[in-house]
Image 1 (cartoon, rainbow, N blue to C red):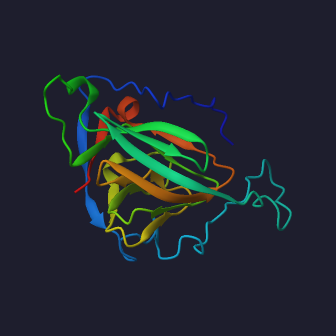
Image 2 (cartoon, rainbow, N blue to C red):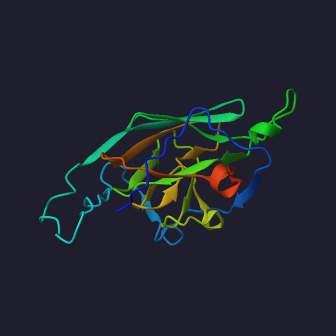
Image 3 (cartoon, rainbow, N blue to C red):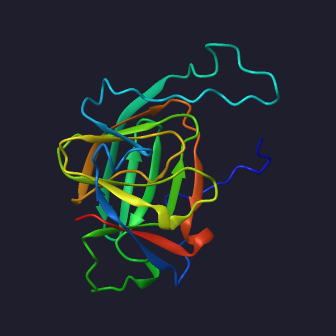
Amino acid sequence: MSTAAPRVFDYLDPKVPDGVRLLAVPRVAATPETVRGLGEIVRDPHAHRIEIVPWPVQGWRPLDAGTGDEGGTTEGVFACEWRDNRLFGRNEAVGGHYVIGFREPPAAVRPGVALRQDRVLLWHCNYHPDGGQLFWPLDGQPFVVPVAPPGDDLDPARFVALASDGTFGIYIHPGIWHEGVFPTRATGRFFDKQSRVHARVSCDLAAEHGLLLDVALT
C-alpha cells in the first residue's frame, strides 16, 4: 500500500512554470476499435454500466464476497466554459470546480494578442482507481477526451485525444489517465456518471514533466 502523503492541488489557480514545452496529442476518431483497452462507445448514457473496483485489502486476507464495491455511482452535469485564456470546469457529480486548461501558456499571454481558439493546453491529468467514468454531450456538439494507458509511471507521449462528433458518448475504464472532457465550442455541458467514492490520483504535468499537453479541439 502507498505511504505517500496526499497531494493538494490549487485547481482554481494552477502554477505553470515559464518555459514549459508543448506536447501535441494525436486526435483520434473514437470508434469501438480505437477506444478498446481505454474505454467504450456510449449509446445510452443511463443504461451504460459503470465499472466499480472492489476496495483494496490491507493484507493477505481476501474481501468477503459481495463487499467492497457497494458505493454505487453518482451523476450530474460536467460543464465547461472558456473565460479568456482559461477553461473552467465544474463537475456537479462530485462537487468539483477546476481550471482544466489554457488557450496559451500563461506566461505567453500578452494584452492585445489574440488567443488560439482551436486547442486546449492541459497542465494536469488524473485517474480513478475505484471506478469508470462516462461523458455524454447534452448539447449534441463534438467533443474530445484525452486519455492514456494505466500505470503510475505516466508517459505523456502515450496520450491520445478521443474525438466524438456529438452523436455518442465516451466511457473510460478505471485507472485510465484523463482530464475531463473538452467542448469544441466556447461552452459545453455533459452528463457525467462515475463511482460515488471518487478516489483520484493526479499528475501535475507542468511540474513533473515540464510540459503542457496540446490537445487539438477542431
